[in-house]
Length: 329
Image (cartoon, rainbow, N blue to C red; front, side, top):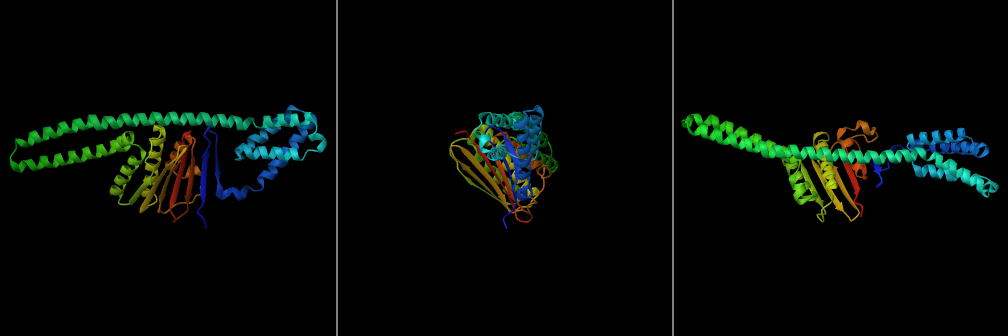
């Protein structure tokens, strides 16, 4: 039996929808009910050309959008209604024109949703850029200013210890050791907040470096393989690095995984990245907003770049997170 799958898809133009393939069967009767209601309101409009019929059509389409009906599904319902018209009505230019006007009015909620999704995607991209800029600034401060301050403290401790008898110097050596640990911790934190290797060498080397650090720190097997061709847009590299970083965090902290595989595939038009772990998994039927802030953040990063996210998981059978982001050719 295949693991349940959840998919979030966002087109290159920003319009997005959400569907849970595991629950699609439960909705099998809904399209027929929607088609019958559409047909009834369309007949009413063709008979009376009333504003009330247009309003009912608009409300029907708005509710259909809320119930996860896509624009292509709604267009198929319209074409199905046209097929139910009589041959005489189909040969009447006025009837077909009126039916087209009615359908155009019904598409208004989908158009507004499309525009809202575009604006949301732009806002998400801007927010991510602002956050990354702030992380870069903090990381640079930690690396430079805090590093210089710790170096000065090291020198001061060494000078103070040099004037003491050998037996008393041991205390200062312990202090120096603790300072070294603090320095190492701040350096690691700086690299995690903004990995300079990502700017200098690109996504694949940065993922390999991240995998090495995580494997050493958590004691898990983390492998990375993929294309190391031309550099990707900076926003894409940063988003994928953060997605993998969060997926690794989830696999180790929440799924208790023993091994994680990271794969990166680049083409002139898209970049695909998958993170697969052998952890405990979870119930994919849970609503997306209950699956933790990590997955919500991953989905938002993908959405901001017009990409798609596929999640395959089930209890005790691991989790695979697959992302695909368009590059615009």
